[in-house]
Length: 143
Image: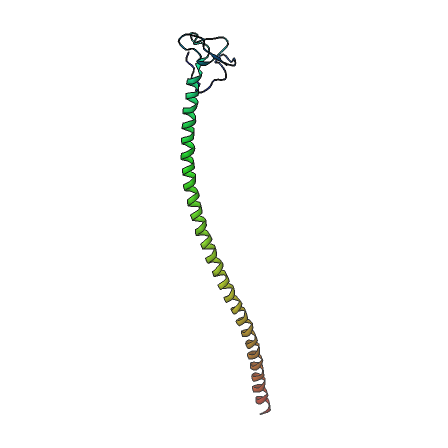
């Protein structure tokens, strides 16, 4: 059975924690390895893994993760640029709307003043009309 876990192992497939040791063999003197307390290089049922290979796998995985992070950062940077551009556009639109609102508010104030003036003139015309009608009635009555 082959170990499918990449990187530095912490547990054997049997569940036992692994430990790091130094090889004392003539073919691999001083080479570090991880192993299960119940196995060795010739016993594939338990974990045995050279530490240098484990570290190489860790580095390869970290490099792959780093590439993913770089790709995501570039995508995020592009999204940020788009968002900033949209924010500037919305800010300009907001200023334009505020200017229009101020213009319309000024126009409304002038219209309110015109309405008040016209109401006053209408009241005067009404009074004049009443006087004219009364004058005509009185003229007809006394003549």
